[in-house]
Every structure is written in structure tokens, then in C-alpha cells.
Image (cartoon, rainbow, N blue to C red; front, side):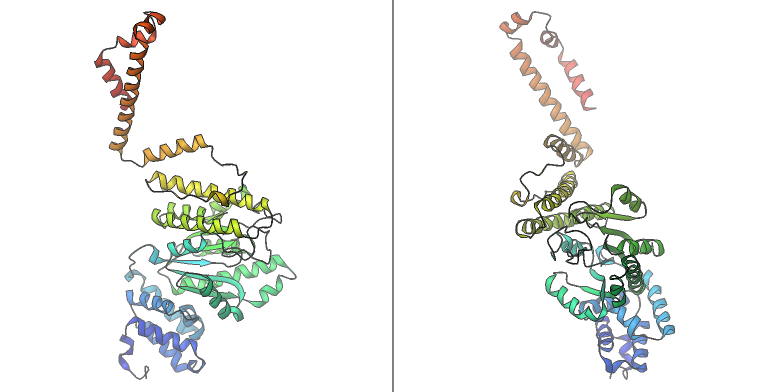
Length: 442
């Protein structure tokens, strides 16, 4: 009926999205005339409506996303190239209300979202747990999350159902790997990781080509070739990549991260950030302007609550492992709080019962107080800073005068003699005192 209607090409984006998902989902529509109809629908959708049609396909929460429509349902190579060229041509006419609306998160699953039970690294967190703050960060920074995983396509529907049951992320998709790549891991792990990295980049290449108007963030881990995937993303499509974040797995003891300081520095020069907690990535995203202070506060608050539950009730490999993770978490939380304080915002605390008793603070209490005071001063405008410092000078001068009054009493003068420093200060005129105060303010 839709094909017979000549006005269907002018239908709203939602109607077109439903038609495309319906055709891509059912075997009876895998015929040339339906594939040609799908191409016709896309080629007659322009500008903002083109992006809205793709968003509506995501909102339908089908297992068949827009990538499947273009790369699976439309099988003719010439037709696909025509569609991809059309999508690129619409980019100048697409506008976004916020930066978040233009960002798509691409994420690995095992050892990036959840602690893997396959032990690709050491037992960093309790097995199969979700890392503190990861889900909230994804939702705050992007409108859509697509999981690019090494899990084979035969597990796609089951994995997608599992994620929608476990996660609060409203709009997710999944692009899978190959069974053969997993089989290689039993014989030659380096070769298996290289094949997985190539397949994950292929998936990125597909989704970035059907969303040319969007920017991407890649979250992977240092255990299965995700670092190489990130390098390929940055090198081959730098205009669409905002950042690459690699969650560092740990050695077999569960304590020491596998990537040392020198290797992290080298990766950073390539646009890749290794991290231990998702608070560190929130700080970096705030620094590059894609996560607001309010969003960073919400991520930190959520991460603190999830850490509390995990620290107290999780099945840790040892107390030493829990202590190591507590040091990482509290250090990154303290860094987040410094930024929040500097901008005059409330801070996030961590429950004391969730921390080991002998946890050594990374910053001494005295230095922390100095940083807090400095951050508070720096958060004020220039005029307010002058007023505050002038007030401080006035208080210091008043305290000095009160001290002088006490020390220059008849008994104090008699004890100190006429040449004491206090007696000399008393001889300063009021004009000199005012000039001194003015100079201190300047």
C-alpha cells in the first residue's frame, strides 16, 4: 500500500522510520522492489528531517537500526553509495539544539561497561559488576549509545534484550563481531585481538558513514585490541572523533594497572586517554567542553552512590584490591570536587563506611584547605576578589591595632621599653596606615 502511494515520499520522518524498520525486520520484504523503495524514501528526505528520521528509527527501539537498513537491507553497492552520498550532502542543513544532541557514544562491553568474568585482565572489580558512574556518564554526554562488541551476531538479540533489562540508557544499539575472531583467541591471542580491532573499526566506519553529522566518543579497554581500534578511528576519521578513552585493566594481582605512566603519556599525544575511573573521563569531557559542570556533578554523585554499594556488598578478590580501587576513586573524586569548588558549585562526598580504614589521603588536609580557599577566590569576579582581599586586609589591620593596644598598655610599655617594635608602629600616622593598606590591595 505504501509503495502504491505516490505521496509517501513526503510523509513525516516518523512514518518513514516505521516503514524502513518494518522492511528491514521481516524476511518477506527482502525483495528488489522493497529495497528500491527504501532507497527512494531516504533519498527524498532532506536536511533536518533526514536526521530526525534516523532519530525516530532509534526511538522505535528495534533490533534493526539505520546501519542495518543501509548496510544489510540495501544490498546493491551502487544504491548504497548513492544513499551515503545523499546523507553527507544533508550535513550543512542539520542543526543541533545542544552539543549532547550531536554526540554518539560507541562503547565496548566487557571490561569497559562491566567487569569481565573471562579475566582478560586481573580482578579489578567484583565479577560482572557495572563500573561506578559509567552509565550515567554515557547518558549525560550523548543522545545515543551504540555498543560495538566482539560478541558474535548470533547473540545480538539476546545481548540487546539483556542490556535493555539491566541498563537505564533509553536509546541503545549494538554492532557485533565475528565468531571466528573469538575462536582465534584460543590459539593466538595477539592475532585474535588484531582481528577484533579491525572488525570493531569496520563497525565504526559503517555507523559514522550513516551519521556524518554526528561526533563520536569511543570507550574501550586495554585488554582486547580496543586501543588499536581507537588509533584507527583517530587516524582515519579525525573530523568525527571527539576523543578515545581506554579503561585500563589490571595485572593478575588485581592491583596495578597494565599501562604505565610513559605509555599513557605516549597515547595522550595520539589523542587517546587511559583512565582508571569514569570520573577521570568526566573531567576530560568537561575540559573539552562536551560535559557541563552540572552534568559532571550528577555523574560524580551517581558514581559515589554506586561505589558505596559496590564497595560494601561486592565480592572483591581481596581487601588489597578494594583498597587500590578506593585510592583511585577518591583521588579522582577529589579532582572533580576541586573543579566544582573553583566554579562555586556544591561538591560530592563519598560514604566513609565504603572506604578502607587505613586509606591514605592523596592530598594532605592542609594542602587541600589551601586549594579549596584558592578555588573559592578564583571563582569570584575580579572586583569581588579585590573586595574580599581588601576585607582581609582590614581584618588584619584591625587585629594588629587591637594587639598593639594590648601590648602598649603602661605595663607592656614598661616591660618592652620605648624602642620596642610595637611602640614604633604606634607612631605611624593614619595616612601611612591607609597607604599601606591600599598598596597591599593593589
